[in-house]
Image (tube, rainbow, N blue to C red; front, side, top):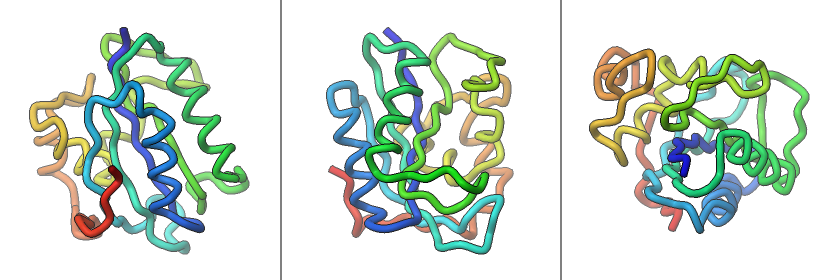
Length: 160
């Protein structure tokens, strides 16, 4: 079994609907679903705000299976890959998979940018207060070192 942390985000179309579709796509393996956060864009900042959440999943799937399923859900949402860090209907990132590291460019584990992204770490901290991002330390400590001013919890937008 491969426990994984997945980050989901959307800033195009029915943002909440796209996140809910991702939750439904991993429903059989869900261990935890974070609250939704509205976040300022990261990387390319001239775009609409994102809705973000984190899913903790566990099941028979391995890292490549989590990636494939995430990409299938992205494609089903109509995602078009034109600009790195650009707008998207749905983004599913494999943040970490228990006991697995990968330097394959198609699936870097742990996710190379996760340690500096409040859009990932803040929701993750909600569902796993003692979480550790391999190679970087405790998620709580990483969050404490970040500017989280552009991260707003949206309890009015439930995923489940």
